[in-house]
Length: 343
Image (tube, rainbow, N blue to C red; front, side):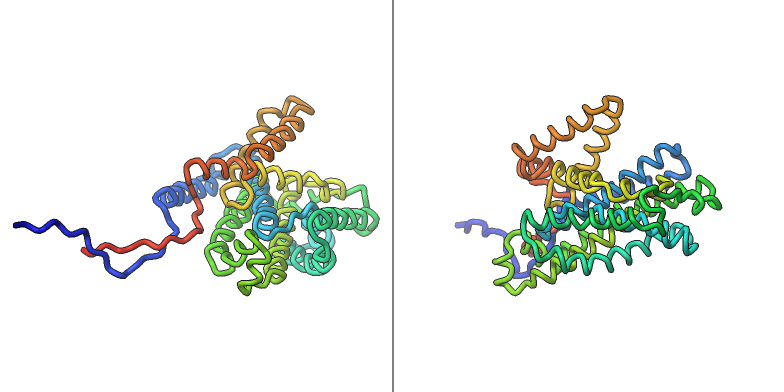
């Protein structure tokens, strides 16, 4: 009499992974896309290069605002303060001190980090809506200070074209694209690495519940300081790079609320608290901008209506809705414990 077949045996060994077949394919496609973008100076038109540079800069800003609001719980409405500081680093370190123009970008990051420290001492005393309003007020204070400083030409602004006079147009556009790629794609991958680390676990815990994370020993103030300083440094670098491409710096343009509005739109539309969301949101923004560029005020109306619709019917953004429907993750950070079958 034959005995029934026994089920396959499992060992006690386990493997921990966060990767999925989709994320592995996404990694391969993403690497090919990065190489394609990096090669654009050799085959793309200048208008395409400038569009790619601007998209990557907006992506970097969106990821930083996502880090602040989506993970750190810091809904800042004043990130334009750091964009403007980065822009005016071109005036101080470039026009006045003679530093090579593309070296000013990392210097702007250092200045942004340093300025974020005293700024945080002020705004971290506020909570919720008061924090959002406080950061906006701080940005306005920075704008007014720059406007009234004759050393940087005050409110009239300055042309930074002399900084670029010794560079060929092709060289300038290529370096702008490569630096934007470093900030946009590199910033996204840096956030992915952070979220996969123990700091990322603490950051996710803070996002889910500050009281619960504090009860588990997570230092919430320390996490928020780290997030705010990192976002300030990155935003300042993006600001310097953006105004290298614009060739002119003025207080109203550098400290414009439009920069924070762009971050907010990309993150809310795409999906706050995800790495994929700001990428999708930036793509939606540029698609709408190119499609409605000739429609005047209808462009802003459509953006506003789309934002309201997403907030009402898909609070997690477009990517959040897709994830709930099909459980897809291009940047998986949640770890899974899988058994190893005995061979």
